[in-house]
Image 1 (spheres, rainbow, N blue to C red):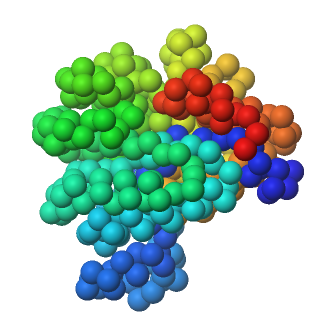
Image 2: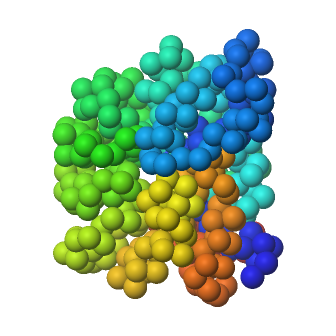
Length: 325
Ligand code: HPA
Ligand SMILES: [Zn+2]
């Protein structure tokens, strides 16, 4: 299957952190523009550090490098670069995570983020894009609630709210009140769960947060009853195989749980997570998966259709995107 066939597949990206699309070259450009000095000589030296051993080892570098994002223009240029890549990969719709707390705590106002995202999305020739702010679970539910206070005046700009960052030791359940309040304001929940954390975190995301999608979710397989529930309720998993390999969740892509998730009847979408760090954007992810597991074009097109149907787009818009361009 060549790249053109993969690009041609109508697909949505439902699990991409905009800060994780920050390429080293753009990081250096923004650093220069903002009068900052990065602790790396150049983009080659920076890339050489991308040898992660765990989620935390990645997050340490990721939160450090995003310090170059200061102004609305920075967030605009970052988002424009991602949307351009997404269009080249044949992505027709993207639901983009961002980490408001990671910027607010550095003194960047929410308005700068939203102005930058909005300008990039408005100027884009495609894909369409929705925004999903995520709470940093390691900062706890109190900080998340304070952040929700800041987000709610802009609730109509978001498709949902999410939960991300260091998973182990930070279960979803304590965030129940935060997500209940978001839900009352019309914002559904998605949540990272079962990436490094146990299957019980996936269960908590469903039961306590009423998550409509589970981000990663691969460790659900440890609990057969949970798998049955996810399958019966057709809860989409936004799976990110290259991310799982890069962060050591699996040693090699050949060992990834993807075929087992499909065999269990789960609703599986393919995503890039943090493509500037994990060795590929979405067309690369599709290509790796097709090659590794020997999937044919019909199987790969089914992943694309599932992703569009698992999006927060209205049904009529989903149908339109599934047709010819
Ligand atoms: O893969 C991830 N997991 C949790 N938090 C994150 N923030 C960016 N990427 C990730
Ligand atoms: Zn993620």
